[in-house]
Image (cartoon, rainbow, N blue to C red; front, side, top):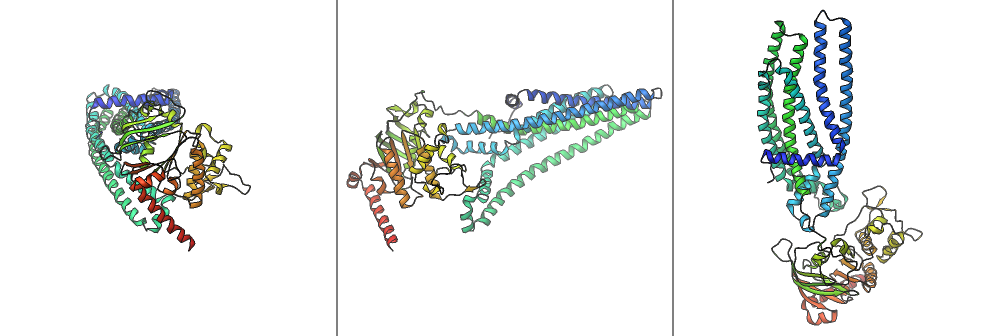
Length: 601
C-alpha cells in the first residue's frame, strides 16, 4: 500500500513536485508565486488603509481634504489589487494548461516505453489508470494548494502582527484549534487515498463497462444478447459502492468541520466582544476596532484555508507520489550492447522456453532455424503457443530461457530500435486506426509517411480493390471508421486487408503474419497468400495459420502443440512422420469437403 507515513517523506515528495512543476512551467512558476504573495500583502494593506479612513472620519480635527486623499488612495489601491488578482488568474489558467499537457505527455511517453511484461502487470496498470483518470486536475490542484498555503501563511503572519500589538494571547486561541483539526483532516485524507487505491481494479471495471455501452464495436452483441440491463446493473452496483465510500468520507469531513467551526465561532465572538468593549470605553478608535475584527476574521479564515490547503496538498501528494513512482520505473534497456543491425538474414531459436506468469511454460525447449529467402508456416491448435513465438521474435518479451539468435547474435544484445525497423508484422489483434486510408497504410513506416505510390502498391498486394473509386484509384484522404465526420466503416475482412497493406508498406527483411486470412473469404484469402508467397522469395517470412492447405505451400512447416514442437519439415515429410500434423490435415480436408458441398448445393 502506497501511503505517506512521515513528514519527511511528504517534504521530500513536495520538493520533487515543486521541481517538476518548475521544470514544466519555467518563469511562470515564479510570476504566480510573486503575485500570490503580492495579493496577500494587498489584502492587509487594504485593511490598514480602511482603518486610516475610518479613524480620519472619527477624529474631528481631520479635514475633508485629508479624508478625501485617504479615500482616493484606498480606492486606487483596491483597483491595483484587482489588477493583481486578474493577472494572477490569467497566469494560473496558463500554468494549468501547461501542467495538464506536459504531465499527460510524460505519462504517455513513459507508457510507450514500458515493456509488454510491464504493461501486463496489474499493479502498474492500476497506477496508470489512476494517473490517467486524474491527470486533468490533480497536478494543478497540487500547485493551487501550494499557492493557497503561501497566501494563507502570509496573511496569517501579517494579521497576527497586527493582533500581537493589541492582545498577544489572542494568537494562541485563534491558531490552536485549526492546527488541531489538521491532524484529523490528514487522517481522513489517508483513508480517502487508501479507498481509491484499493478500488482501482473496480474503477477500471466500471470504466470498461461504460466503454462497452458507449461504443459501436459492442453495440450488436449488447443488443442481440439483451445485455443492456445486465451491464447497467453491474455498473450501478460498482458506482453505488463508490458513492457510499465517498459519501462516508465527506460525512466525516463535514462532522469534523462543523465541530471545529462552532468552537472557532465561539472564540471569535469572545474576541470581538473584547474589541467592542474597548471601543465603548474609549481605549480604541473605530478604525482600529474594524482592523482588529477584520484581522481576527482573516486569521481565522486563513487558518482554515491553510488547513484545507495542507489537506489538499497531502491528498494531491499521494497522487504525485504515484506519478513519481510511475515516471521513475526502470525501463528495460532495449539497446542491449548497442549492436545495431540493418537487415535480418537468419533467425535461430535454441532451446527456448517461456512463461507469461512465471509458472506454467507456454513454450518448452523450442528450437528451429530459418534464413533469408525461406518461408516458414507455424501451425497448431488454439493456445498451442504459435503467437507467442512471433512475440518473442519481435523482442516484446525478454524473460525467456534459452537463446534467440539474429544473424548469429543474441537478440538480447541487439539494439531493439534498429532491429524492429527490419520487421513488418501483422498481429492477430491488429489495430483499426480511425484515420485516413493513407495514414492507415503508411503508419507501417512513419519514416516514409504518405508515399502515395507505395501505398497504392501495397493496397494492390493486399487485394484491397474494394477501396477504389469510380476512376480506379484509391482515395487516400478518405476517412475510415465512424468516430469522425464523413468516415466509412469497413467490414472485418476489409479492415484486415488494410492491416495487411500496412504490414507490406514497410520495406522489411522479416515479415511476420499472424492468421492473415482469419477474416477473409476464400477468394481474398487466395489472392492475399499469392502476394505474400511472392514476397517470401526475397526475405524471411513467417506466418501462422490453422489451414494445412496454406501451410503446405511454405518451405518449412513448424507444428506446435501445447508449447512443444511436434515436427518441422515439408508437407510430405510431416504427413509421414507427425501424427498431430496428419490430424490437422485430415480435419482440413473434411472442412474443405463440407464447404464445397455447401457451395454445390
